[in-house]
Structure formats: structure tokens, C-alpha cells
Length: 224
Image 1 (cartoon, rainbow, N blue to C red):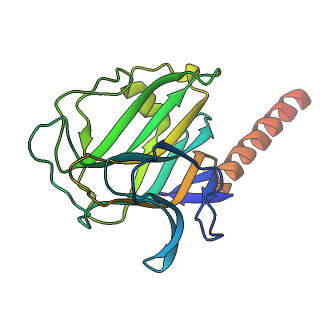
Image 2: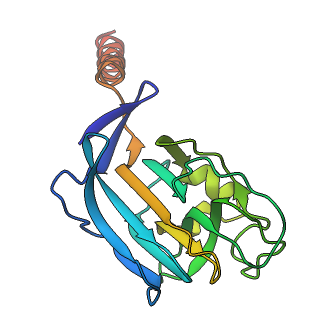
Image 3: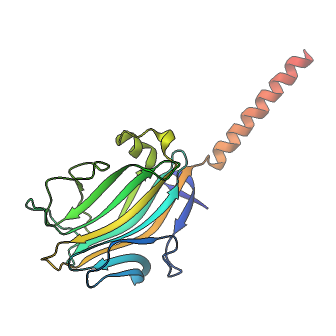
């Protein structure tokens, strides 16, 4: 399948959830809390994947992709805490409410190399005890459904990972609510796409004309 992003053509995989299925997605986290739901639902005129939970629990939905050079990951997502799609972080506490996503890089043996961790939270916490992720977390203000794009090669470089070591990566959507808040955490996501740039037809045509030109030059030299 081909698509175009900012004028660059990509050969890609694509998932828009219009079949009503979460094909290829895995559920994780602590699912023992009350009010956990995940699946596909109609939202804003389209079907979207979602996870929703409240009370003391963490819930994740994740999907892995095989890496290829210059691969771009893109998706649309909306994150909300108690209906607020643009939560503002405040305070500093080990108890927090958060919606976030991760992009994690793996080697050929499925060992975690490193990950990048992006979150929106009502409170922030002062440390990250997992050395595979940057600290502090990178906060964002999503303000409703937004489009996100990541160049995996550039991400690996930013994280200090040799790109030749990367064989796959995983996109994880996550929500966490503290034991006392009972907050309603929702992540909706759609149009998951991965792909690498491919030459456009005009580029291929110019390349082909160049080869023909070189062949003609060689033939003329032989005749001389």
C-alpha cells in the first residue's frame, strides 16, 4: 500500500479499525481495577481503537512492527483524563493520573534496547526508576484528536541506539490512575501507519532515462 506524507511517498502497513477489530494488539498492565474496557468503538464519525479505565490500575494496548530503514511511524490519538483532552501537569508526587504512549526499540532477540516515553498528566512525579526511558517524562498538550509522526531512525539516534541494532519497535498506549483518585482515563487511537520512503514514479522515470542515456553513450563510444 502506498501513501503520501508531506509530499513523500511511503510503502506502508495501515490499520484504521473500520473492521471493528484490534487485530495485532496486546492487552497488558494491571487489569484488576474496576472499570477496564478496551476494543473498537464509533467516535467522531469513525471507528477507533480505545482503552478506558478508572480506579487504581494501569492498562496498556501495544503492537509491534518490524523495522526497516528510514521507517516512519504515524498515528492519530486523543488522550483524556476525566474528559479533559488537554490536561495540565501540576505538583510533584509519586501518586499521579496519567495517559501516555511509548515507542520502544528491540534487537533481533527481542531484547529491549531503549524507549521514548511521552505523557500527559494531572500530576508529575520526580523520578523514573526505569533506566530504559528518559527522565523526566516528556509532557504534551494533545488538545483533542491529534496526528503524530516519528522517524524511527532519528528516534534511535536521539536515544543513543545504533540503528543497525534495531530490528523491531513497539507502540504502546497506556493509562495509569492512582489508588485514591478514581479518575476516568481514556486513550483513543486511529490510522496506525508504518512505512519507508519509496521513489515516486517521476523519480523512477528520471533514473531510468539516466540509465538509457549511459547505455547510449557507451554504444557510441564502441562504434567510434
